Length: 380
Image (cartoon, rainbow, N blue to C red; front, side):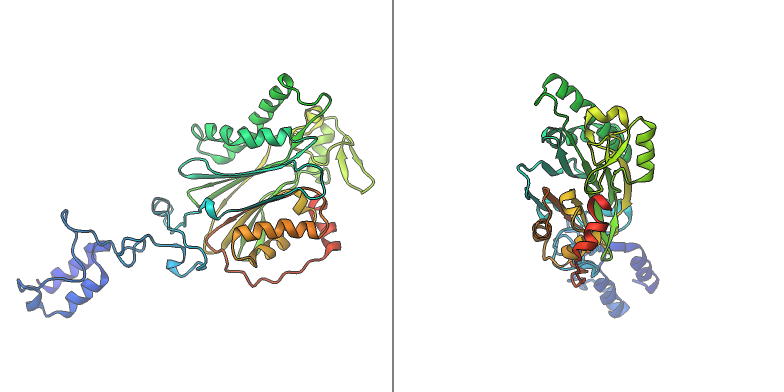
């Protein structure tokens, strides 16, 4: 074999030939390479009858075991999940598989008589994960309805529409109409007007994150140790929301705590349900946001209800979670800590780990109750 042939082999072989093979062949004298008794013991060229030794970045040691999150040296080593090969090829970057078994969830009743919070985590399709929190008010009926049917509405729409922001917007509006029909034909308590917040996150291919929200439940992404808010509370304090309510014929009043309410009844300007206020500006149309994840920098997604948001701001939540060993511990600690700091409402949280989980575990945590009351929850 000539030197020119060896060079062409090295260029064209790609991942089918290991680097060690080419190095060995380069070190062997040319006359020995062409000797009929010379064999390659470490690596074989692929043939239909032989074993394929890929030696690609997804199977670096040709062991047949999948490459994991930390194999590239850019993720923390406390999570051992395989790379999603099809998604990684599609987006041109290594993408870890987000396992539902590692997602942390917690929901505590607090000082309330009943827990009207609901949450859901599921593998909606082969490529889409579904995460949702619902904070009911005026009874649990609206939150129960969303917990039971929201995923189905989204799944039906995904089969026809690829834009997930469009899918979520349509799903929120359709489930609101479906709830109205359900309450009309099967009234639960006469005179009651149940409603619920709704914050839903869809993760497609482990990299495309789309969030939709109505009300004051929140979604937050931890990127490089900092909290990145993915939702804005729909409260009458927002100038755009207040003006929209007034244009619709509604009015804003303030209670004894200085908290604004639509028509003296509801502390939010968007919700699913609350049909007595639909004609005065309370709508079910969500605000949506799309984010491309960077697993080398993004640690986790957190969905929270206002029992937590009222007492801890987004960065405080981020700092506490970053000190926890795993997402399950983090979810329990956040809900416990919100109650410890005086939260009276139901407290629900979902923590979804991403590639940089554990990178920022040394973040400092500070908590100021007075600052939290001023800048968090319904006042944020």
